[in-house]
Image: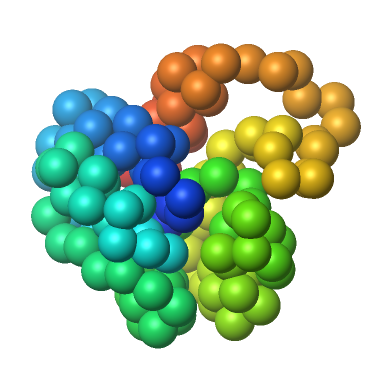
Amino acid sequence: MNILVIDAQGGGIGKQLVAAVKKNIPNAEVTAVGTNISATTVMKKAGADNVATGENAVLVCSRKADVIVGPIGIVIADSLLGEITPAMATAVARSDAKRILIPVNHCDNIVAGVSDLNVGRLIQSAIEELRKLV
């Protein structure tokens, strides 16, 4: 199973996702794409099998993934302080991959009805959903 983790800004959520996937689903191939080099670097250090940076990497890797995991902003153009381009959001949204989106209420996007859980609990929930797909 090819799992694509996408993150922006400092890559903190992506870092935790990569580490959790590698720990809980060790046979999965994890590709991490950061919208910037900082995000990519921390996800690489967390144990991603493959890493890349930037818009074209998101476009290409979204076509090849079985599952895409990341903060909900990866499907919203101009989110994450403008790091998610319209092309990136479209690529993720149109991908044939299953999407597991972390509902973080940041950058002017608020998900109604979702408790303000800590990131650790959100990551745990994402891993539970991934296990259902494996």
